[in-house]
Image (cartoon, rainbow over all chains, first blue to last red):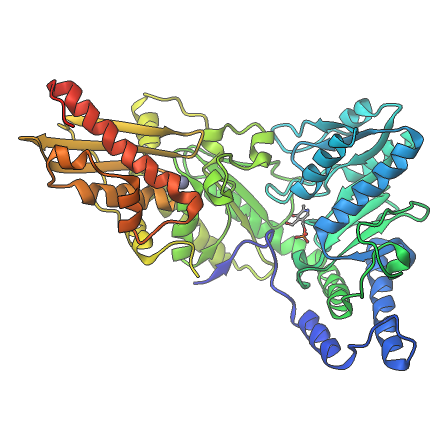
Length: 395
Length: 128
Ligand SMILES: Cc1ncc(COP(=O)(O)O)c(C=O)c1O
Ligand SMILES: [Zn+2]
């Protein structure tokens, strides 16, 4: 059996998106900035994609800026609002401790440029409380940036509520919705979102393509200077085939959201209850306010990388927040942010299911994880100490 | 390209000398759960020769493979020779480790050294 359960890392491109991309590479390779028909044909494709993307999230086409992916969209959103803030003398930004590094590292840079950053606690369940956002907003706050859904533990934040508070307080609100777009309902107007980042490869589109939604009237700062593409806000000849494939994938995946959610939620909850039978294990993140595809567990007494390698041998591709998978000595900042101590954070497993997952596959994953965890515990000195009472169980 | 060499994967999938020696006369434990790798080595030494060795490891693929290979390299060897085991020898015997995984082989060397020290402490002997 071969099961790809790492859909938060990336997704397989849909056949329609591949077809869209290939046919454009073959037929419509003109430069959208050129005035002859072949160029204008590409321009049309580009603007159609913009309209399609906008429609899916309830925006208007001129509020969509195409980027090279989620990271660029995050960088540009934060830089832009920070510039606006600086002009008004508002140099305080609110975010959370478990944002993606595209946000956290940009905030670090902004701190060096004299911005002040408040990182909100995400609590044990991985959820931010709107009232804590409200309490953190100051006179000089220019931006609140909170991710829609977390990429490791899948928790979905009360975005609409946070957005409402930001509107009331006249503070711009950005959300990194890379993990959420096309998987959970999003309407930027109803959800009170001023800026939103998305990435095509998380919803069956190509890698290296994404978009930034910025509400009309928000002046964006260029990260890339050059030609007048993207209304002068992002230079460089547009990746027309990639952008059109993204729009195709976005429409397609979004149109199946209801059925996908129903099926995935069932599979997710079955997987969660199966894995919860493993002694001294714990689900990471709230059980209900989470992406329908996301399961994330900690197993005490084992290390994540060896778990992943053995699951890979059984045909299951997954990921972990252990230090040894990240190449650093620290385990995932997300698991630390929800209060998992190093000892158990190393033993984490993230399974992010694809829409085509079957019940039989879920059963196979449960059995495989159970087998591997008990095998690894069998020669773990940490487990021995826990079992003998020399050390105390945390989970 | 795979992350690890076939040798590493072989020792990871089929670790040699896994377990505990109840009447070990040299035990060493190194690493900590904070950094993510912990190794425990058990030695049974007779006439200053390592008759048996077993290990337990909490850690990544290269930590498990390094422990396994280290035990193979010292099994049946005189203590004085085992003292000379280096992490480089462990890594080389595994046909190399990724650069950021070298610390796992260092840990294997340290675990063996720590168990040998314990043996010296228990017996009052010193080896160079
Ligand atoms: C929450 C989140 N933000 C941003 C990104 C970065 O997106 P991209 O890989 O398209 O730059 C990712 C992807 O890993 C993500 O999960
Ligand atoms: Zn390691």
